Amino acid sequence: MSSLFGCVDHSLYSNGMTFLRRPMVQNINSIEADVVVLGLPFDLATSGRPGARLGPDAIRRASVHLAWEDTKYPWTFPLFERLTVADAGDFTYPVGDPEYFTAQLEMAAEQILRQGKTLLGLGGDHFVTLPLLRAHAKIHGKMALVHFDAHTDTYSNGSRFDHGTMFYHAPMEGLIDVNHSIQLGIRTDFDQSKHEFAVIDAMQANDLHANDIAAQIIERVG
Image 1 (cartoon, rainbow, N blue to C red):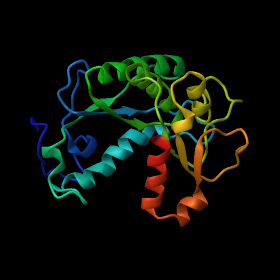
Image 2 (image 1 turned 30 degrees about the vertical axis):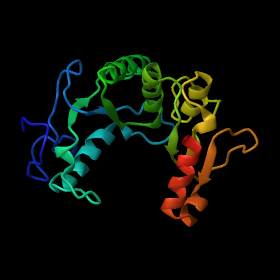
Image 3 (image 1 turned 30 degrees about the horizontal axis):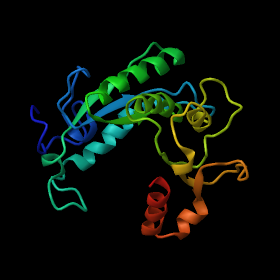
């Protein structure tokens, strides 16, 4: 597939899998697409079972089952005639080196963002969020965060590389504005008296209409 536009009907189970069957790009320094997809096969920061490093491949394989639809619900037009998307493959790093991964991912993400592109990262454990936030903050400044999760990931007692500490470090580093950030789906304990993020917990999310949740997000983020 040579064009960034349009839909191509490929097998759902064979050949190399890119995200939504979009074209693969090799050079992140010169990308023509509006959106760049980057796989982040990293799970060295997880405290539970490993395997999140296989996430990018699994997401791509699942996405091909949506790629054959020219018009995506609820839109009434072919999405890829208005939005160009390219898959830059997986970010590679020396096995067992989280420090290298963190520093180099931040640099790679910044390269993509400075070209005016939107970056879609496919993890990977939750820690991959922190270097991505650092790169985005260099371009956009302090940001609002909309975070969907079962845990707040604001724990302060983890190591330097921990998938439960990103949103403790991000405000401390000035990357996100907690007063305009919100977490949704939380179903674990946290100290509400010290928690600066707005929260719609799992029970509230289950009871609220999607439009009500969206309204609260918009009100908080501004």
